[in-house]
Image (cartoon, rainbow, N blue to C red; front, side):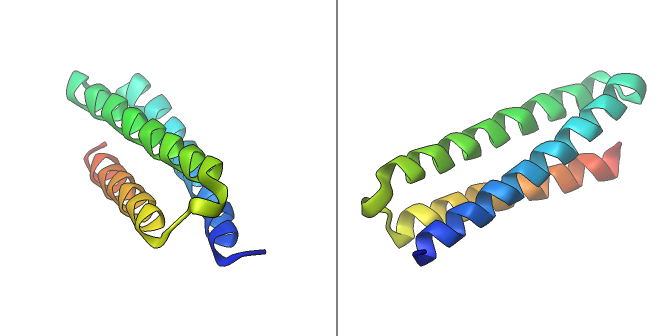
Length: 91
């Protein structure tokens, strides 16, 4: 298995974990949160969706995957993860 394929598999798992955390937080915010927190959750969901789309496009690129593409996905993941931490702290 190539290094890129291993990376993509790990990112699939990590994005799945983030998605689970966002869903759990969204349920809590729906019960106990305010409108600002609900908007922040929607932004998180959109950001996660964009990262998942980026992952899909990288998978489709197969042999053309390069370091710049994987770095972009890593940065996208990091931004979503950081935003989730901020929303979680405020919830």
